[in-house]
Image 1 (cartoon, one colour):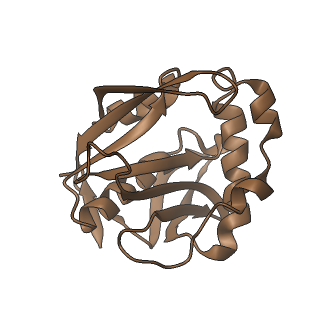
Image 2 (cartoon, rainbow, N blue to C red; image 1 turned 90 degrees about the horizontal axis):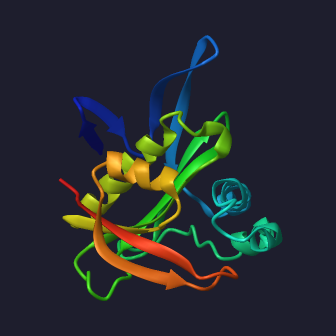
Length: 196
């Protein structure tokens, strides 16, 4: 299956070419579904990205306690049905560079929506185009499941992520919540977008 954006095809689950320069060369990035054997590598990237991206948002004490082993135990990358969470990986030279997790909305007021549960790219890849490719893949996956609209949650103070989502056409829908799980009351805002 392919998605189109600005006249370009982005393969889902195959190799995608990124035209961002690293020095004087270009590189190839593979987009593929996560498998159970990927859990620890995804968890390491997840923890490292949280510790970098959320510094100054989530208390340092909480970030310092994050462990890849704990996070890896939560993942279920086994094949499942359409109503199960699905994680797409961006892999460069055999290493996970980013991932996106999608599924049916967990929001009681949005039963017919899909949801972007996670989108993380390793800090060394920020600004490379990997996040945009993962987003295209995530939206394609949700459309394939029959969803016409989707939602996501983001920390209100996470300006970098909010800019990224807004550039991709997501808009704040006015719903907010306070999340006390991280040792502080953190405000989150909900975004929505149509998936056409």
